[in-house]
Structures are given as C-alpha cells and as structure tokens.
Length: 306
Ligand code: HEM
Ligand SMILES: CC(C)=CCC/C(C)=C/CC/C(C)=C/COP(=O)(O)OP(=O)(O)O
Image 1 (tube, rainbow, N blue to C red):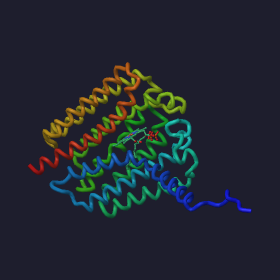
Image 2 (image 1 turned 30 degrees about the vertical axis):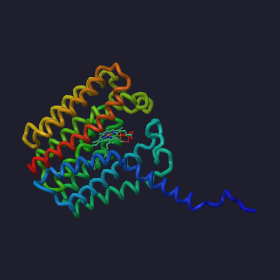
Image 3 (image 1 turned 90 degrees about the vertical axis):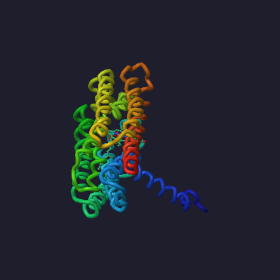
Image 4 (image 1 turned 60 degrees about the horizontal axis):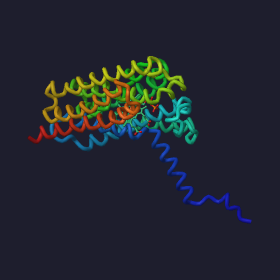
C-alpha cells in the first residue's frame, strides 16, 4: 500500500526552503534597511568631491546593511512575546515559532558580526565603532529597555535609526563632520512624525500590549500636537543644508515642495478630523525621507557638474 501522505515531493521541499529563506530575510526588516542604505549612500556621495571609490561604497553599504539587519533580527528575537500580542506583528517568524529563538539569536549574531568585522577590516575602525553603537542602540537600548520604559522611547532610540548618513560619511573619510551630523539631525527630527503617526493609528494595539507609546500614555491629542511641532523641527533641520552652503538651490526647491506635502499631512493629523490622516501621514513620511535624500544627491551631482 502506498502512503502518499508520507511522500514529500521535491517541489514541496523547495517551497519550504524558499519560505524559510523569506522568513530569515524578513527578520532583517529589509525594507527599512534599504531606505537606511539609501541615506548611507547619500552620506557617502556627499562626503567626497567627485565620484566616490565604488569598492568602498559597496563594502561600506554591505557592512552597514548586515549590521542593521542583524540589529533588526535581534529586535524580532527580543520582542517575540510582544509581537505576538499585536495584529501587525503577530505573523512574524519568531513570534509565530517558524524560526526558533536560538536560531534567530545565531542568525542575528552572525549578521551583526559579519557587518562589523567587514567594516573594521575593509572600511575603517571608526565606522565599525559607530555602527556598533547604532546596533546596540536599537537592538539593546531601544528594544530591551526604552521601548518598555518611556513614551520618549523613539525620540531617544531614533538616534540609532538616524545614524546611517553619518556611517556612510565616515566610511569614506574616517572623520566626523558637521555636515554629516546635520543629516543625522534631519532623520532624528523626522522620526517622531514618522512613528507617532503610525502609533496613533495602532494606539489600541499598543495599549493592549502594554507598550507605553506616546498616544497610549499622553493621549491622541497631545501626540497630534507633538507630530505638528516635530514636523516644524524637521522643516527647520532640512533648511540647514541650504543655509550652511552644504547644498544648493536645487535641494532648496526640492525640499520646499516635499516639506509642503509633509506639513500638509502633519497638519491633517494635527487637526484630527480625518481618521485616515495618521496612516496616510505615516506612509508619506517614508516617501518623504527617501525623496529628501534623493534631492540631496541630485543637488550634489548637479553642482559638481556645473
Ligand atoms: C526609532 C526609530 C524608528 C521607529 C520607532 C520606526 C518605526 C516603524 C514602524 C513601527 C514601522 C512599521 C513596520 C511594519 O509594520 O512593518 C516602520 C516602517 C518603516 N520605517 Fe520606520 N521607524 C524608525 C526609524 C526609521 C528610519 C530611520 C527609517 C529609514 C531611514 C525608517 C524607514 C521605515 C520604512 C521604509 C518602513 C516601511 C517598512 C515596510 O514597508 O514594511 N524608519 N517604522
Ligand atoms: C546599525 C544600524 C544602522 C542600526 C539600525 C537598526 C534598525 C533596523 C533600526 C530600525 C528602526 C525601526 C524600524 C524601528 C521600529 O521600531 P519597533 O522595533 O518598535 O517596531 P516593530 O513594532 O515594527 O518591531
């Protein structure tokens, strides 16, 4: 008698491997890291006159990307219980048990170590050290402590997420630079409008899970005001590259357009009479940061050519 249930078809086996591979890839929060790498690449381009050394660009981005994905995998590991409690995160690979805790721990450690060693040997120790700080800042300080301790978790933890342009910059020069810190400031100021817009939309989930996000601890009205104020802080920060002569008129034109749209959505959130505004503002914030760094790059190369 043939027991067809016990026969595993090679195609099923392949599908299972692919699905496991996808799960591991997801642990690294690839879409977030991709945007971070764009920011790091722009930092690299702005750090040097002319075209940057491509080998260094590739090794730098690889090192930063591996470390950031490692940090994200640690976040999946440490947040597995919390992730289970919220609909948005409940299907994640560690939360659902498709990847075991120890497997995630090994994977996160390998990615992080590979990224840091690559940066240390092939790029420079300063970039490796700053990347290690960002990694620990997100994976340990934010995820394990701040997130559960204070509604200011993301403002402080945001420093880790804001690091990529600086990491890109130091990868090329090995030195800290005020212009690079300005780029960090932009992402730092942008993080609260980016995240709190989503946190308003997901307030009930955070409350149910007992995470002290600002809309849970201080209410939605207060958070809407904070988004509006941090929005203005972001606008001021984005004007600084032009004001300091780091970027030119093309950048100014780009960010005036971008900031109008950004502040339109932040205003809609602040007014509070459109229930769809917070989620729309969150999604726009991602396009905003991507386009902003795109304008910085365009401006840099146009200035270089003409
Ligand atoms: C502490 C700082 C930050 C916090 C707390 C935060 C929070 C979040 C959250 C909760 C999500 C939703 C994730 C999901 O549902 O899959 C998200 C999505 C996203 N964030 Fe952030 N974020 C931060 C910083 C950043 C930074 C610095 C960048 C890039 C420069 C970024 C880029 C993105 C992108 C691209 C997405 C969309 C991911 C997707 O399509 O699934 N975030 N962020
Ligand atoms: C080395 C380096 C550049 C490190 C940066 C690491 C990194 C991937 C930061 C991501 C920031 C982020 C998506 C936070 C999400 O908050 P959350 O974890 O509270 O969101 P969740 O509920 O979706 O998990």
